[in-house]
Image (cartoon, helix red, strand yellow):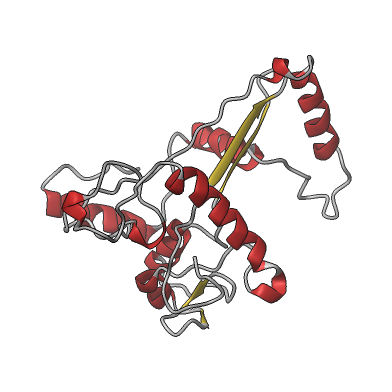
Length: 227
């Protein structure tokens, strides 16, 4: 993530998640990056040899780029919301919130003062986190995570019923496009799971299959079976 906007990345995609149960097996499940997109979407566009939208990433000069290779190599993603003019500072703030809980709270008092080999055990934060694609250095990832469990019954009874009521209300709203009903977080994934079950497998782009086969050959293992 860029800090509006120096020419280097300082935060990760810093995802946050919330899962809340409703009735009859239903649930609200949010899982989102605090950047405009996750790095995986940049990688998918790269494998498809397609450019990226203007509000996804920045080049090494701190300017918005649509060049997928530049975005992939710099790893400088715009915060959720995009530029400051479109409220990107809110995504930046959310990213720092996650960094505080998952990085700072996890401890690491000796950052930057001693060689990596002498650092205390703890979670890294900010620019000290190893880039995801750099696996040959031998450095530990040391990514911090924070889990918070809340018992709804400690507040008021009937949580799942109210959750179901809210989800039902949102899904029942009249959509602007009749072909695209209103959904809640978790619905697209449930729909995709159903589609995969019906198809009997996952559909991949041809370039993804090619990359997988090349990796299997490099590792001297059996390639992924396809239909």
